[in-house]
Image (cartoon, rainbow, N blue to C red; front, top):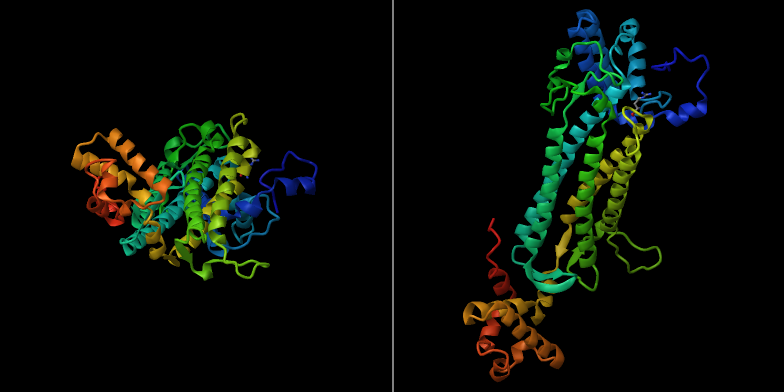
Length: 447
Ligand code: ARG
């Protein structure tokens, strides 16, 4: 391997230092982006008159061959990093040796890595955004299929009011839709630039750095522009931190859904059955069927937050401009992208294998206290009682029920009248009904 530096060194680098400083074992996933960057750079060098047409044609052919040969393949980790691998491989190609030596003209790895990582983040944010939209589709279908199911809704994890299961599933749809849109906006906001050099720019005219990147970034319509500030470009890792922040919010959403489903699958709730092909067992207790997938989705979100904090702390004390610490932005980012991508893939499949237990949910709706607000609302709407007063009246009715253990629906007219004239068994029979309750909520825009 020939290094991209070394002329001023007379001693060999200590093997322990080589091992410690290299990044090829993880930055090899940037191969395609590094090659795309090099293809663009060749064109810029050609426009600037630093490469002849023949030279640039040969270089482009060589880079495309590398793309073809090594995309998705494991790269030998004798190289320091992905840039070194591409450069070395080009130099070793027949007839390219001398020409390849020109490729690094007006270029620094400090700028290259920013281009690579920004292109990578663009691609991955769109991929993840699509996975979130896929998940939304699954939730929309589930909501539609289960439109008739009502269940107790909770606040403070205490039973609150009847709700539709579909509305619950659609709440997660809203969250995941916002994740998908956040990722799309993030992608749009990443601007690809070149020409920062190591930190001070290069001698090539800035206008030569205007380049239509869509030639190579087939998915993206982004163009490359000259950098507005070279120091900023090589110092900036906000785009990594922003991606990690977005993924942290997504991780939190995924974790909350996972927690709901873990709870609902307990014998205590028993609202859902997760198909056993999506569960695992216990090595000791033969009866166990555990929701490990959901637990791991919940658990992984902690790792995603850790990755965000990792990069924030790594960056916070760095003087401008490039510092080698910044090489350590990659593993946390790659990890969060993998973790969220994997969670989304398995969750989508799992959701297609969940049975919602309508009878069990319905049975819990017999709890009359769930309708306290509906009864108070009745007094407001039909009897003109101010809400605060109605709240107290129904509070007393519930307290009586809890004290005596007598169901409200079994109370006689005389008993009910003590609380309010307008409360009759007939009226209460109408109100203490989950369908009546959910249908009476009209403030939510119908989709
Ligand atoms: N591998 C480095 C990174 O990921 C880029 C190389 C810059 N190295 C240097 N010695 N200037 O940030």
